Length: 229
Image (cartoon, rainbow, N blue to C red):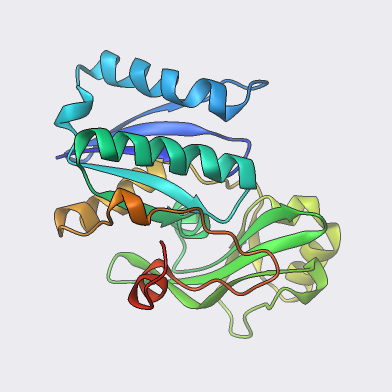
């Protein structure tokens, strides 16, 4: 199975190809916009591994939350490729991706939302998958809900961005990994079992996950209510 993954929700843009468990990844060059570099990087990656776009089985992308412009880049590119190949899209949230990269059993993912706010989501490892506990939220650093029980790991660039948040985590005895950002390779690995199960959405349903000023619902919840992913 071949899965192409795109991730541009932060300044660390990347693309990756998952081929039967083996992942090849390329990172967008610094100093240039993802809109300039992502698709040329995808073409370069596919050419290097000898795969044509029409051979892909699914296309995964980082749906958000994250930088508004970046989210539109990955979503738009994924939609275009899905339409061209008639392949399903698999959206993966940036916070789930960060939780998977952190690798702990219970992870509080914290992404800098800029404008003095933080995207946060609590994830627990259940049967080799990271399950969201509660909802993804955006809030001020001093309003981020911290887990009360022990054994949690916090990760993400919001920790270094907001010293007051790190002080709260330290006071609560929560270990931190501040250098975690979502990557296309991690998106691909999370999307792979879903693609194998035949999951995915039509390209027409894909839309970035914006959370500012509201609590986000899961992709499944929004689709069940007739909304967009």
